[in-house]
Image (cartoon, rainbow, N blue to C red; front, side):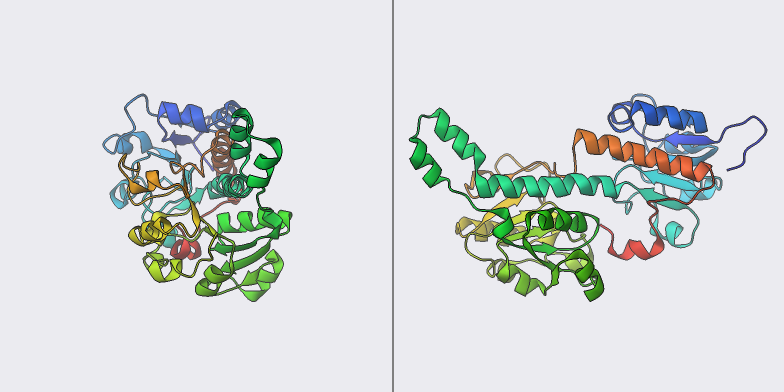
Length: 340
């Protein structure tokens, strides 16, 4: 990236001060400052109205949760802006798809780091629900008989389960890798998964209905697209095995939420739900009162370590761009059709 004599390129760091401290490790801040002049908003300054000023003269922007969309008008007035490096995953609402498809701007994202967090969260939910350590703990502290407690909470072995993965994208592939480490049989439903790739991943391809009926654990990792909206409704939920564990850490739009609530009220299966049609989940949501549901506040993709990795990955991308090196996590036009 060439600039005038003695000048460093300008990079707009479009995170709030609080988010910047959370996402960008000190060593990454140092690397970025050594490679560029960093312009960042102060408290309360990261707004749509201030975006043009923050981007003036910038060749790259580091964005994240809470960054206002960088629309066509802003891009048209700033021809020098060549890279948007997003420290989160989805870029759908951040940069116009046409600008990526035309090559007007390069975009990268940190979805790989979020995927790591989600994948571990899925495994944690499975192990917790299958083995019930919290019940062991409460029973021990309540003085329950040693042998009776062990008998009552015998649990199930993760490696003995058939696991159905819906969607084999970034997260799905990492989840598959972790489940494989336990020795589970894995079925995958994904229209874009080839037989060759399935063999490479060590999984079996299956249609959605067959997967739902054959799996002890079902975990959703498909993107929210018009064609995937409510892909799981009453008919699909009826196919779940009694005692199945159903996990959604992807998007609530994949499921007909009213149908899911009705199915859960039968008590036939357990669900671990991280995403909902309305977020935050209302205090009076009926999901809060169901004993066979484990709830979390859209937290699967969030951890202190993954946040720092996201920031470091994004800074790495900007430094590679400034050095004229290819991006490692570029969002290509071909990816847009199937991205969340």
